Amino acid sequence: MEPVTLRTSRLLLRPFEARDLEAVRLACQDPEITRWLPVPDPYLREHAEEFVLGTSPAGWREDTMYNFGVFTLDGELTGSMGLVRIERLRTVERQAEIGFWTARERRGQGYTDEAARAVIDWAFGTLGVERLEWVAQVGNEGSRGVARRLGFVLEGVQRARIVHRGTRRDAWIAALLPTDWQRPLHTPYLPAPTPR
Image (cartoon, rainbow, N blue to C red; front, top):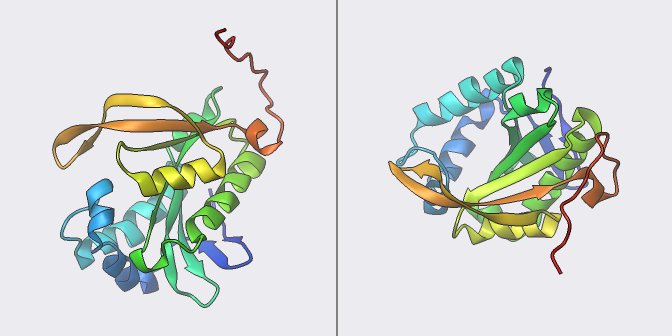
């Protein structure tokens, strides 16, 4: 897919570019990012180059990951937001997974929620996603808070789902459907009966 740019009232979501290398490198020095996400620690310039110049553009080109740099309108990096596991989008399941990180100095300002709303709207509208998943290590309360505010429904804990720093860890999983955002599902849905 050709990379796209999304805009909100305060943010520009665009593909990463070479000029973003140092901002990404600096943001990923944060111990909270390396604690919860599979990024190298220490996070060196070569890691930023691989992410910004390699992995992210390859994801768009190969339709495996649609990753956005999230910037304020004056060009300051607030984080990264992307859709992963895109290969499931091309099956009858029409699913994807959302993932994100936020620079420490930008947390608590609503930027991640705002960026996620734009990506979710694009996923449900343009891409036709019918189930969007969120997965995070158990304990990542910041990420869980974002998912809850966006309307994701926590479905449970998946044992040993994530391998982080050579150790299997449990993960929370939640899902968001287009109907949760007052949008139609194109495939009929038969929910499980509610126990009495």
